[in-house]
Amino acid sequence: MTAPHRISVFGRQGNEISVIVAGSGPPLMLVHGFPLDHRLWLPQIESLAADFQVLAPEMRGFGRTTLGPETFSLADLADDCELVRQHFARDRRIVLCGLSMGGYVAFEYWSKYRDRLCGLGLASTKPDEDTSEARAARLEMETVVKEQGTAAVVEPMLSKLLSPHTMANQPQVVELVRAMMHVVPPATIAAAQRAMAERRSFTAQLSEIDCPTLVWTGSDDPLAPPDRTRIWAARLPRASCEIIDRAGHLSPLETPSPINRLLHHFTAACHA
Ligand code: MLT
Image 1 (spheres, rainbow, N blue to C red):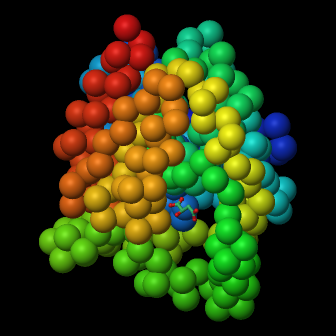
Image 2 (tube, rainbow, N blue to C red):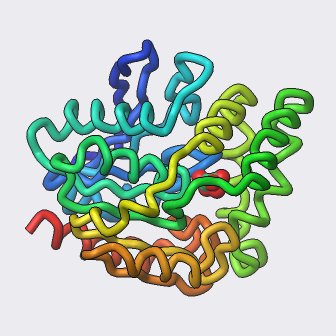
Image 3 (tube, rainbow, N blue to C red):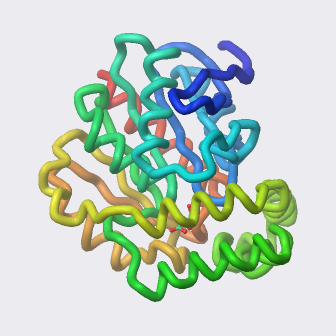
């Protein structure tokens, strides 16, 4: 197995995309959520690299990926993922799995590059656009981080991202998530919130997503609640939908064992 290492790929807009690469074999790309970095997927990078080539790119401004231009769209992030696929997987199709904001990127990737996909993972995410209240809350966060810095938004967000069970029993996960959030520059938070506020809806296209699809969310995820997730997942022609007990929004870190099993089984079946 190739140990996890970091490699940079040059983006089309002068940005440098930092990617954690581990293992060899059929490729699996893992796209993190907001406001995080590749470390959301650390347990999966470690476990799945035994059988797959795991690619965990960091999105613009997060981790060690440079922001590039001041603003970006989710389609730009999908283009970055495609550059990463071309660089590491060459002519092979990938399983691409995105969590939350990473899921919005996954929908865009499907829209632009569906012939390069053999499976799609959609974790703790949603296909619809923002309500006007959600959009207003994003613009408000942009103002707060610009005026007061990133620290001002970390604690209020933390309890929305992690389940009560994680908050009470997994201090190392709480600390890791807090650490990931604290280092995100205000300019990145602003750019990502704008990109998400302006995202389009894929609700009308769900029935066209005909590649094998794995949908999951946490039983205690207030941002992607199980009931709503089951409803939209049922409209995907080839999807299975799993609800992960005791997980909040960040199940890859909160409940790694069931997520490793699910992703392993799904990725192997998609590449079979
Ligand atoms: C995420 O985890 O990526 C965010 O919750 C997505 C969002 O703010 O819609």
